[in-house]
Amino acid sequence: MLYISEEIWKSLWGEGLLISADWPTFEKRDYQKSQQDINFVTEMIGTLRSLRAELSIATTHLLEVGMNRISQEMLSVVTTNAPMIQRLGRVKIVPAVQEEKAVEVVVGREPILVDVADALMQRLRKNVLKKSWLESRKSLKK
Image 1 (cartoon, rainbow, N blue to C red):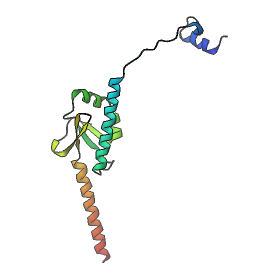
Image 2: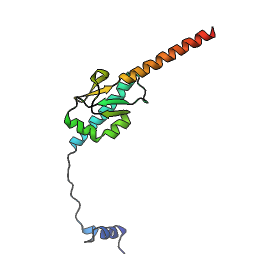
Image 3: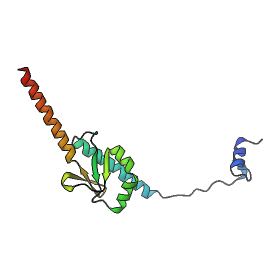
Image 4: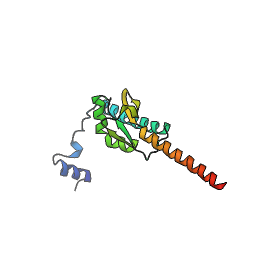
């Protein structure tokens, strides 16, 4: 029996010896487009998280992100990476949102609409209920 590496070589490729085989050739590939796409997705997730933090929107509330104004090229990038964006950004990607209820954020050069009206109303209702509960509790103590 030869060295184990020679046995593996023989079982996989079956010709000649590994020791006398040519080295594999290096094929340089350009991944610039893929890198740009991943950078866009990363920036989009970061922007959505920052918006959520600035507006004090709980991560339990799923925000709707509309693709109303985004270019076709970036729409395909978002569509391809939608599961990752939705999970990491805690959002739901939809074809369109009502512009009156949305905030526009810019990712790269792409305008993205994020529906924050429902989340803000929910937060305001919660604050009002909390305040009224505290006031009623104070009045009961008197």
